[in-house]
Image: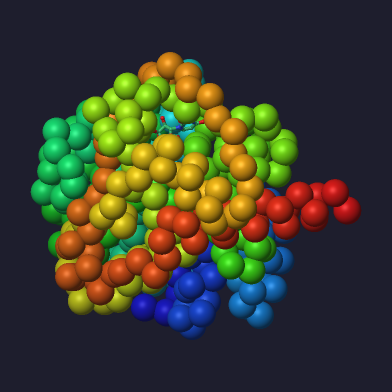
Length: 339
Ligand code: UFG
């Protein structure tokens, strides 16, 4: 299993995974339409690894172009990251989310069938567990109706891949359910810098830290949690990336369908994160308490026991380190864009 086709390979999680894959000597081919990423990321990957992966710029839904890539590249395995991912936007534009996320997955599955590519890793999310009845969440917990159209696309694509695995027992399919990825590559060259006002907590804190936004709005302090603020499982993006490489090792054992949570197994509240961020960076983060955000759950964190046992997964970085790496990336990015 040498050649890996990475869709969305210039995005936040995709780019970090590509770095790990290259470091592990995989031959990487990227497809990305640059909808939510930048071409410079390719240069940065080359700067870090010394290798410039082959890159195709188009939308994975474009089946004739996808066909060409499969014909020319003959990938052994696909890691499918490409997709829209903003929870709030998906509630306003459900059709856009269903169409894009589902069509691109259909196109890839068709190509797997046509070109006998038997292996796929799918970028899923903890959102498939819906509103958790208990934590930590294990892979045996039921997949429920999600709280957003974005989340529903993850539920649906998981279901479609599960059905495919029934009719194609030769397919090896790994569903990776991510918890909350944060942080950045230690080089300061790769990270997450969304356009406009960030929806997610850490990108928002980063903008406050560099003075681009005034203060963090904490969404609710009346949840049944340690300090009333929402609790999540924040995992360093480099640990998450490593989980993908480990999942490829698993696929080599021909497991059929397999499912893993990728999280740290530890919950951290919003106020705890702010404090850890301040400790890690020495930067004061002002905040105000706002009402709860629609669709948020109180507590969500993973059991990562299955990934530990079956993939040899573990986390090298804690939340504080992730805060520091995220901040360093933001500072570096500000300097680069000022030039
Ligand atoms: N939060 C704030 N202020 C902000 C942003 C977030 O207080 O400005 C709080 C939220 O209320 C929540 C926590 O910070 O308690 C984390 O919020 P994020 O938006 O960073 O992350 P979510 O847990 O809401 O979303 C993540 C992923 C989604 C995924 C979802 C469910 O970003 O892709 O988990 O698994 F769908």
